[in-house]
View: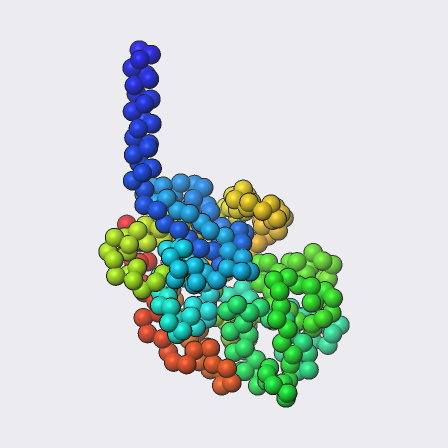
Length: 332
C-alpha cells in the first residue's frame, strides 16, 4: 500500500509539473509601485484565478523611472497599465498602443491646495505656483489650464508650473499653493502630514469637466493580429476582472494581499486599506467592469484636442481601442 501511495504521489506531482509547464506566460507592467491601485491583479494571482485559465502571470511593479509604453515596445511586457492621455500621445508618436479594457471608470486626479496660500477656487490659480506630475500625467492638467485661459509658458505666464516629484512636499513646505494628488493616495499623505480637510481646497478633475480616463490595459497592435495571443489576452482579462470584483467586495483582504506582494516593505496597512476603499469608488459598478465606455473615451479625446496652446494630440486617433478582447473574455 505504501508503494502504491508513493506511485500515486509521484503521478500527482508529475501532473502538476505538466500543468505548470502548459501554462502560458504573460507579463503585466504596472504604471506605478505595488499598491492597492493594482489590487485586482495581485488578487487574481494570489487566489489562483490566473491558474484557472492556464496562465503564468508575472506582475512587474513600476516607478518614477519606468515608462510602461517603452517597456511594452521593448518586449519587456505583453500588457501595460497606462492613463489614456499618455497612451494616446504615445500612439500618435508612433508606438501603436491599443486599449483592450478600461478598469477605472472615473478619474481620481485632483489638485489639492492650501487655503492659507489664497486658493479657494480655480479663479485663484492666477499668479500661483502649481505642482504638476509630468511623465505623461501632465496632459489633463495642461488641458484644464487652457480651458481656464491660463498661460503656463513664456514670460507672460499666468501661473508657474512646478514639476512635482511623486510626493506632496511642495505643498507642505509652501513651495506651491497646489499640488497634484490622487483621491486614493497623495491626498491622504497631506492629511497624515497634519493638514486638515478644512485647511484645504480640493478640485477634482471629474468636477471640472476635464477628467480623462486612467488605468486602462494596453497592448501593441501586433498582439491583436495573432489569434493565439488574443485568446491569451482574453483569458488574462477574464481572470483579472474576477480579481477586481473580489477586491471590490473584499477591500481589506485585497489590501492585505497587496501588502504581501510589496517587496519594498514601504506600504502600510492603514494606507493600503484606505486606498483600496477609494479605488473601489473609481471602478464603480462591477456589472460591466472593464468595458470601455465609448462616450467616456470620446470625452477624453475631446478634452485632449481642446487645447489651443499645447495640444496633447493633433487629431482624433483611429484604432486606439477595441472591445473584442473584453467581449471574448465575457464569453469564456
